Figure 1 (cartoon, helix red, strand yellow):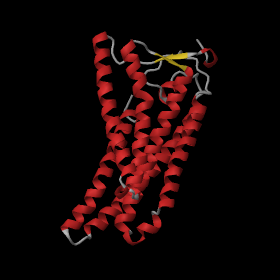
Figure 2 (tube, one colour; figure 1 turned 180 degrees about the vertical axis):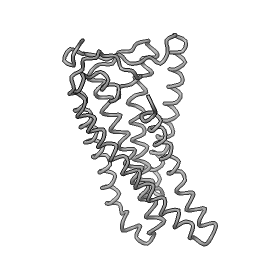
Figure 3 (spheres, rainbow, N blue to C red; figure 1 turned 180 degrees about the horizontal axis):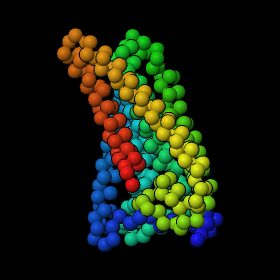
Figure 4 (cartoon, rainbow, N blue to C red; figure 1 turned 30 degrees about the horizontal axis):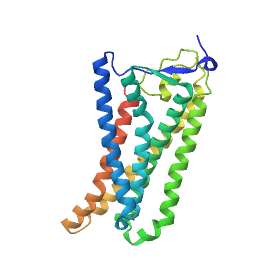
Length: 261
């Protein structure tokens, strides 16, 4: 069996076996990626160009759109290339870069969603302190902390995963490179340190999730105390889009990684 020093490339899972379905997948991925690029591009342009949108909520939304663009551009172009040219190959370096960038952008997105929850909490539960707690400098520091934490987190995961000896071949059971599939290629007992790192990751993710849930409990309690129906509707309208994105993000990750084998 080959080891990690002799592996120069990986073989990704094909999206389809027949040429017609491969071209169909290419068209679907192209349409989805163009729609995502257009939507996020419009958000970035609107927030950057309209001074009325230069507020903490839209500043974090701009960062969220940038991280979403990054995560899309990490996996989708390679999948489109493989479907169009009927190939499965990705280089060892390309696979490592894909793992790093995917964790980096998804981690940033999750941390930004947590910060945006804090923004909603302060605006509704502590409106008189909003300008103090979420000034321009504080927002910049929080956004920088989200990007920097995700970078270090991703770097640690990638370095640890690709330092493991790989002796189970080079066939990845997914159409993009991800840590669980790389671990399946590692030698027996060599992935235990990565398991500890994954356990730490689970604690970090769960802590952010608990913070989001606790914040929304406080938010809903504050909203229900608002006497006017119009005020309650306005408060809910600023929270529900964020809550919907968080729910979609958490549910898809849970479905992908916590479902039974």
